Figure (cartoon, helix red, strand yellow):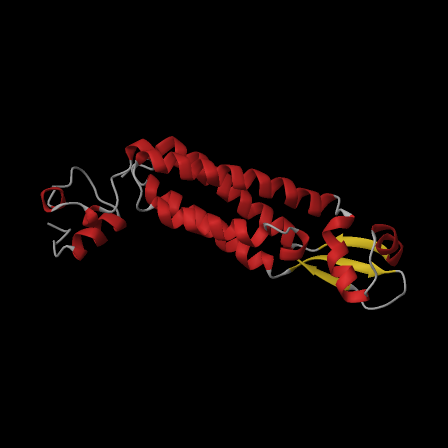
Length: 196
């Protein structure tokens, strides 16, 4: 079976992997703030550094799951949304990794110290350093973007998913060519032996 024929399985797996990396990284420390008052460093988790990190990662997981079921038009729509989300996440994460903005740490610094206002917070901070997690997240977004492009490229050739929701006349179609794991599962759900 060619890579294009396995497009649905590869696309679903890639987006689920990228979304999972995003969710995990959102709970980890992305930035460490060194304080001017020599207090304990302030640890800023990914969800605080990038406000939309967790929601977009959840959306990517949902898109990955939905790609297993939808028809050709929605495949392109969902893959396009995953591509757009990946581009935004790359942009925001790259900023955090290479030049952390004050806005990424200000809410956490204010919550920890009770000091508010950009000027006051800036005076409280000696340095902001990124951990490895933004780089790990960037790898996840790269996987997401490549997977979304791959899904757009191969979507037309995917076998239709969700056959169990069709009428009886459409449910007993014979497979032409090899079937993937999702097709086999659909066959088993209908009581058909996919090995025949």
